[in-house]
Image (cartoon, rainbow, N blue to C red; front, side, top):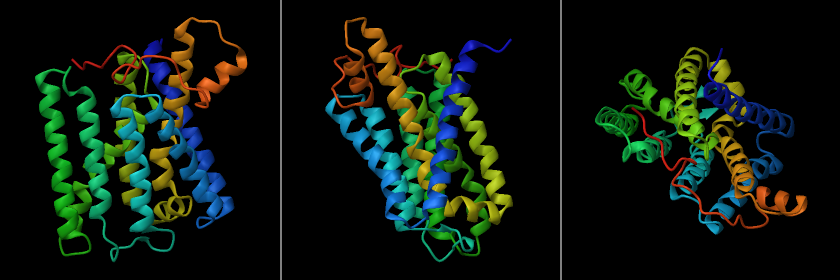
Amino acid sequence: MMDENVLHACMLLLGSNIMVGTVMSIVYFLGKDSLVSSLLIYAPVTMISAVLIRDKYPLSYVVSNLLAIGHGLAHVTYPFLNEHIGVDKSVDVWQDQIIHLGQSVLVGAIFFSSSNITFRASSLLFVMCNIINVIVGYNCWGQWCHNLYVWISLAPALASGLHFATGTLFHNSKSVAKYGFIIQGTSSVITFFLFKASDDMLKLFAVCRFFEIYFIVPHYTGFFYGRYMIHKNLSRESSALNALLEIIGVRPMPSHHPSYFNTDIVKLD
């Protein structure tokens, strides 16, 4: 029988992936360059970020939301992946890779202080790989060593999956989080090889603005689920309307927030 923590992580990640697919489908039908598509992608996460700051959420989760927005804007400003040719080597990539470096630093920072020496060393190595990726991306994108960059870019692909998990799994137990990060990290590596093997897939995902949506939408799961759990654990009298307004962020949530997860912070052994 599947461990309930694994099942819980799978359900939350599945919910995030379904929302990603739903938003992609809406963008596809509205049109990639539609103003409504841009509002659909960026308006909710901007409002959520404002609520996080207002309610004094953990800095890690605020930064995670802002990194998601930053990554989307990087793809808008430097569209090196597009629906016409797939990979456009005439557009710089290193700016986007700096965001992925930020993702690797964020994930390492969340776990670093409470983890063992093996995890700390792995985190530092992972950050170093992403630093090298930025340097190689700057020097090799569209050049004779382009293929070297492609293989090194596995590091930011993994950072992408871990950032997806960061957005989704806020305010869960450390056991749920551990499994969720492993599952989504593995998924991102598989996706890397699928994209590497198919320009057609890249073109389809570009026209749906996947590379913006993938990081932003999972934060909706973390935000709403987290606020629901905070409200549930407060054990106080509240009308259904006030409860709903708190959960969606209209009313402030009168609660002390944990460092990141609801058991203070994750420790990976």
